[in-house]
Length: 163
Image 1 (tube, rainbow, N blue to C red):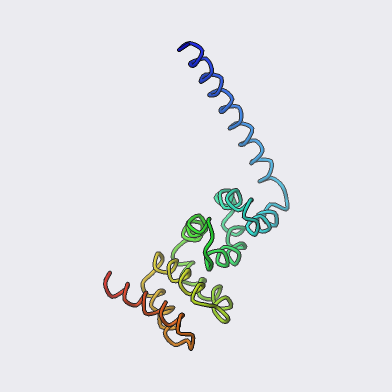
Image 2: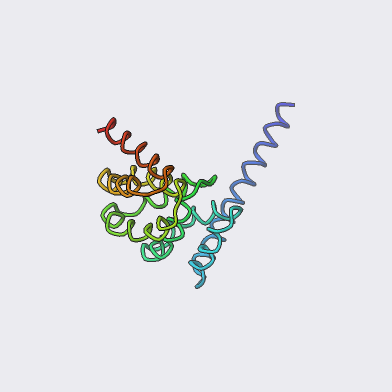
């Protein structure tokens, strides 16, 4: 009986290796296609394809990843099951580049944003830079929407207690 179990595990192991090799070959073929960035952009909008798209981002050039930054910011501004992967993708950018670009990319989202967008972006910002977070806190506190103000207060308190 133990011999049969070992034999099955050996078969499973070799199948896993074969499938891993096939996946690497398929990924390389995909990375060689001309429309890879457009396909990833579309996949980021599909929850069933998003995880794969987020994982493949690591294989793109910096310029290609930067071209997808708006899509990543949109995904980071609302709660979704992949938000941690989205945040990781954003945090993989150089901090100086993020500080120079992120506010311009979030501005349009916040124009008609709710406390949801403010909270999700504050959660992201706090992982990037306290000064960046403080600027968004101040913007939230100046909004007429009480829930957005509360989000600002929550993060203002967080910054005060964690300095």
